[in-house]
Image (cartoon, rainbow, N blue to C red; front, side):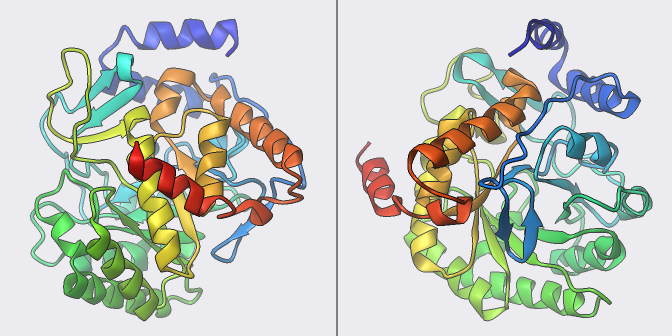
Amino acid sequence: MSALERLGLGLMHRLDPERAHGLAIRALRLGIAPLPRMPDSPRLRTRFAGLELPNPVGLAAGFDKNAEVVAPLLKAGFGFVEVGAVTPRPQPGNPRPRLFRLPQDRAIINRFGFNSEGMEAVAARLERRPASGVVGINLGANKDSDDKAADFAAVLTRCGLFADFATVNVSSPNTERLRDLQGAGALRAVLERVQAANQALSRPLPLMVKIAPDLDDAGLDAVAAAAAATGLDAIVATNTTTSRPDLHGPHAAESGGLSGRPLMHLSTLVLAKLAERTDLPVMGVGGIADPKDAYSKILAGAGAVQLYSALVYEGLGLVGRIGRGLDRYLTADGYGTVAEAVGQRREIIRNKLQII
């Protein structure tokens, strides 16, 4: 981490977390945020769910909720960027405070509740996005909606023309009863509705579903079956967790979804188990804070990875550091591409995580 980046992060951490996030978005929009460089290595180029990626390191949904800074984020080295979650109608989300840093744990707790400017605002911005670069949209639902599947479909229909992939978010813990949609029957019904809307687009998108890290083995079986039955292109594992490992600091007991370092173990175990249950590509998300974490996800079965929370503590320079580290790991282990490494140590990693 550069001295300038360390200084900037130190100043940001003196501010309320949500205000700091808003300032980060503004700095990117104004072009005054330092952008790292990602190595242009043929080993890092990969294909995931039909998407040609310059590298497998993506930005998870939640950072650029309203598609305000897609262009600078792509310039920062991410292989792909996911915006959202986006809801049909604008909604403020849950009351503040709703975002908390846990610096001792390198973690974040949030209970935003799908705060969104709505699909019309997001569609207008995505229509002006750069032609190059891979951009996805995370499909959300309004809090007061009685038909969340219809909300997902509406956002996809409105914004799908301007995106490269879409993710059905049935796993945020901050919208009431949303996670109930992960049940076997409910999930298949939701995915059928969204897939129908997807196929009605002039250019259907690779469609994914994002799951919680708190599912048991039966829940993972249900997800794998529903994804296969509805023709999905990939599964994203995982969202934030409602579980609470041993945490520290004054915000450790806050409600909401926990992300960051403490999620690495649980999310990677779920990833490895899921990869055993499906032939679909799996995206690895949760707890990635350095190149070793990203490489572990790939070896456990992830064809691509996403990060977000670690940026709060490591800055955007982390993107380039992970890229360079992945390139070194692949070279050292004799892999010519990311795809060659996917799942190569899945069983070893799963067994190790199960006994920790």
